[in-house]
Image (tube, rainbow, N blue to C red; front, side):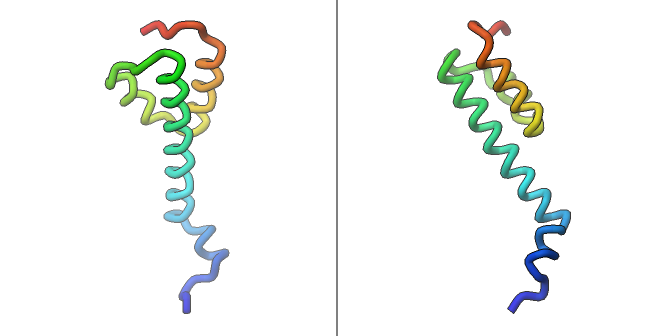
Length: 73
């Protein structure tokens, strides 16, 4: 038996935060996989900067990585 209904759970701030973090983590993992495949391993300080980007920013970054020929740091 559940105290909250499914609609209540989906509308909760905590539930939404968990979903957003999961989406951001998947976007980050995809972005880093792409970078490592195309350019090799990159400096951990850059990885740290990429890790704090939100999902939308990561999507833009992936688009840019797909267009560039080399990574200039």
